[in-house]
Image 1 (tube, helix red, strand yellow):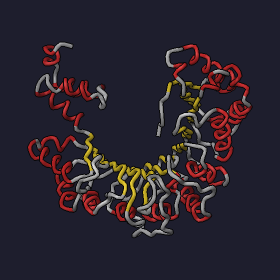
Image 2 (cartoon, one colour; image 1 turned 90 degrees about the vertical axis):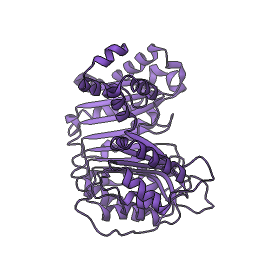
Image 3 (cartoon, helix red, strand yellow; image 1 turned 60 degrees about the horizontal axis):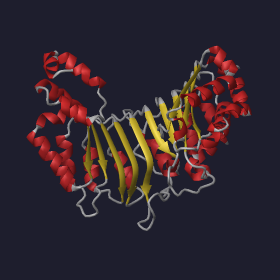
Image 4 (cartoon, one colour; image 1 turned 30 degrees about the vertical axis):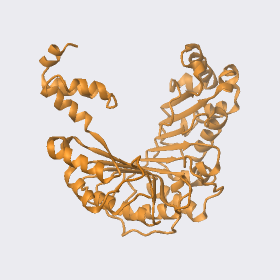
Length: 424
């Protein structure tokens, strides 16, 4: 497309065009910004929609100065990611900086905080407490000086919050290695349920299956309208709990009971074979608590690490989870399977696994016969198939052969990809 032609396009079409440019394609966006003022404005709208601020005074002040010089950019910034500064010698946020950033970034709807190891300061709480329009909040791989600091942080969040993600967060001893299990503070009471605190989407890793986190969630939010729940793996945490505390199990059951009537989507992530990484799986499959999910329409089982959810693991897990659900409302089942080199060398016999037959039968009889889609995503963990279409065709044919009833109903959808990585 020539620059002259680009200049002739009406502003409305220019704005529409940017919806099709990937936000990660930085160089394309930069090139578009040079066409004209109209193109520059639309490029800035996309470029500055999400920004990252390092956990240092210098980084925060640079953004404040940048937005002071170009104040129109502030209205584009909808999401801020706060991450650890790569330098070990820096001043973390103080309360004045946190307050000034909040006053400057007035249009923020989402915040992500990640990879802060013993770097949490009062300035972060001040920043979060002044974001009145915050709708989504994600905190991942963050350790606090004190076990209760996490809940002090969460209590500062806006009453408009609709999406919350907690993954590997809490307090650890200073001497603990990165990824060590977080301290459980026991029952933590909030100030009571605020009617406006109605979450729609919740993400927890198995590292958050603790008494303090679960008890706080039950008291701090109205979970009766939750639509989506993701239970992910602990992922690299040195959590070797073979069994959960009975109180933890009871609290998780209470959590599912509260959200059961409204929950539409459940995603279960699986990582390594260590029990602690996937603590949510034995808890859910060793008790009848999944029966409370009476309105569940979509179930997703996904590997969070290459080579983990192979068919010999993923299919029995799918059958076990399905057997514990009421399934009267289930419309879609998504299974993301890994295929390693041994699997690809024996594709022709893959359909002989008995769990395929169990899955085919289980989803073809009441109450599962209302299922409208079985979506099987196959992630190859070998470069052998990247450019070889025959491998992909072979595995698609094998799965169709293994699930004849579902294939005949026309609800079987198969997608083959190479090394997608975690979908959570």
